[in-house]
Length: 374
Image (cartoon, rainbow, N blue to C red; front, side, top):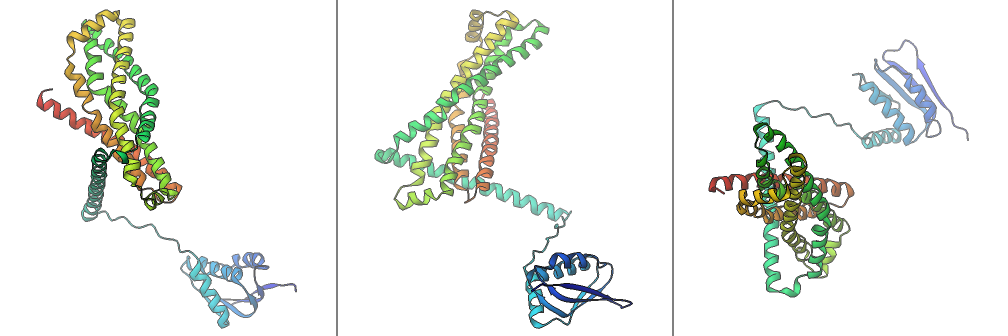
């Protein structure tokens, strides 16, 4: 049976009276929507549904959208002559449609500012508490592994040492080599003005051995390894593999955390030494090319003018940086939910948090060593 729809306006009626007849269904909703769109939204409208022979959810949706359009102009719509079933259908469709949430107004007051500040401080304190808890879990499982060596996964440790350390050697060495070249070039440009070119060796040695070597290495490892830890553990969380491990009687902390963090503890000092050597080599090369300081003279000045204390100050930071990077990466991985968006967000957060924490820890170390005279 062919269905039809008709819309008739009553002239000179106040408010505007519109009579609908025929069928307002999915077959006629396109025609009906075009007719309803012609109704003005600047005046109150009464819609007579008494002659409507059929109405389905598509037609009810068209009527509800008309009502919303007119009410948005501070006018009103009334449906007259509707049967009980028609009224129920209109009410059901109206309740099912999403309601646009208004933008919450921001309160510009001291109280609102203090409330926001307090929430952020509390969030930061809770985050630090969680990281401390994960550090405690690692230390506890490490002690347990020392007491029960059969539970420790040596193969996993070797694998992560390769992933964390061996595969990071090229990028760490290249970075330190280029940093040494830049320091030598910039230092020679400034020191040449005072005829003190030979002191560029001290500048390179102290900068790289004490600060830049281990700091930049830790930043590279934080971006490379913290993200890898988060992605690996987070993927296992998404696939419910960690729950399966618990079901099989395996401790996720012993299996996942201890080998990864321990590999960082072993490999980061070694990477720091490699970065120091590469940085000194790059600085010596640029000093030879730009200033004519021969490798023999560079080595002599390095041995005579640089204390081994600077090497100690730089490398003593490595285990702390390794703990920070490993704990942040493992903690972020365990916070991943069951969707890819959460995995990406936590991976990004882990990198940012690890780099920020490493820089803050380096600043604290610098103040500490300055205070004790090292």
